Length: 158
Picture 1 (cartoon, one colour):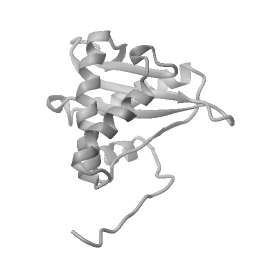
Picture 2 (cartoon, helix red, strand yellow):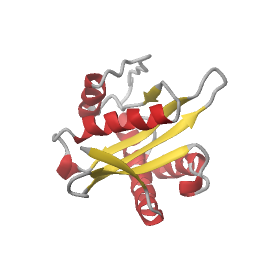
Picture 3 (cartoon, helix red, strand yellow):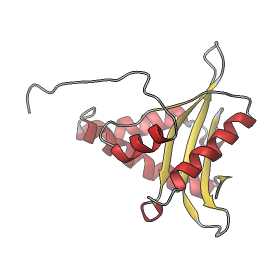
């Protein structure tokens, strides 16, 4: 089984820089951002969401660990959003490190996430997944997540 362990400052700094790069690449791959602006846009978005790093209000960043082995398997980052109707959680990132994928850790992490969210008194979890990430889509669908909308586009010129 997995457990969610609060990220240390060193883990956060390493993750932050890695995720700025990764998120920029995902937007390039999706065709959302031009390569010349992707890194800047990604950094701006990360800084907007995490202005005070780990101490940023309503942001939760955890390392995912194998309980028995104590091995770091990945990270999960979510935020509590209170838009007025009732609070909900939005998952910004769920990353299982490459060498631990396809072993059930993603599913176990989603179960641990649900327990954490319930402990906060919240009953709704939302997330975004890039359409080109079939493995993530399959994981979330298997765990019971349903699409609430679908953003589509068509490129007219290459």
